[in-house]
Amino acid sequence: MTLYITREASKLWRKVCVETSVELQLLVEKWKLLLAGLVFQYIHGLSARGVHYLHQPGPTLQDLGFMILPELGKERGYISESLFTFVFLSFVLWTFYPFVYHSKRFYTVLLWRRVLAFLVACQVLRIITFYSTQLPGPNYHCREGSKLAKLPPPESVTEVLLINFPRGVIYGCGDLIFSSHMIFTLVFVLTYHKYGSKRFIKLLAWVTAIIQSLLIVASRKHYTVDIVVAWYTVNLVVFFIDKKLPEMPDRSSGSQPLLLLSVKEKEGNSREENLKLLNGNSVDTADWRQRMQTNGNHGEESIHIRSESAANGK
Image (cartoon, rainbow, N blue to C red; front, side, top):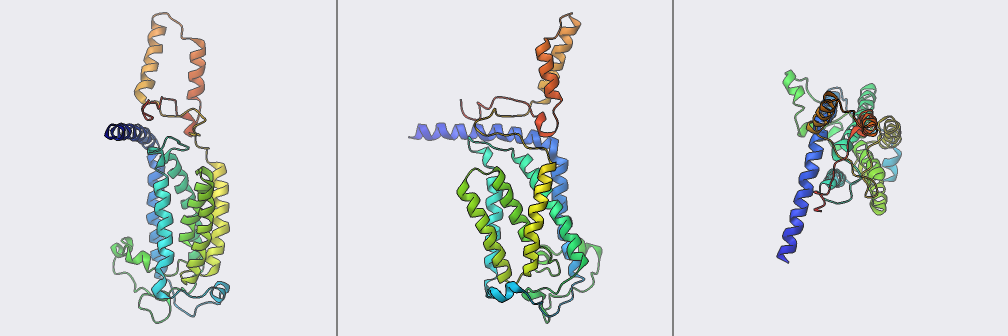
């Protein structure tokens, strides 16, 4: 029994090491796009903090969702946040499953590049929208009489840039149309719907998104319009951007595994061909054509094949 556990642990460790090596090579190639997406998350938070300075508390607007859904109350507002945290962490963990499991349908780096592209596009539209018209916040800390409803003018640039994290993010006001929570939730659900493999989890993810929408309205954190706009905007943005981005290589078990060819191997191939030419030997025509075709691919299609037998313990 101990021998079996040791052997399986060794296989798992080899798989993790091989996958890490591959993902690091992808990260070296794509790090600028990933960094830009992460930096924009800060810009989005900074924009939300900025609109809080413009927020003017007032009477809560008439809302159909508020009429239909009973108010959860201030003491139960954590329910929607708990569900969102569960969705967020579940998705992040799922994106790293190629490091562990035999079945690999995507590369983690390439998947996050797509996810960040979806998020940034939606967040740009969100910033434009909530700066265009500021609505009186329906949340408890944004209502008239609350000390947090209005922010005094900032005393320094540093105060604005630090966005009073995390308190400034949790108790923000004015960034309403459309819901940031629903942007993340729907982007994650749509991504899993395309690249996930479990039908039941896909159905559960959509049901969770619907429940999340209802809980946000019931918690009075957003108006119903904020949720409705998020549903059709995020779906349309993801649809169009997904069509524009190059499709990721398929890593499903039925297809040939794709991995990076290292720079050293590329240089080695070039030196080998040069030596053949210098010695008067012609390069094999079929081999030359195959390499030309491989080098002509773009984006993720330029990823070459290397054996993953070490990862599977064979």
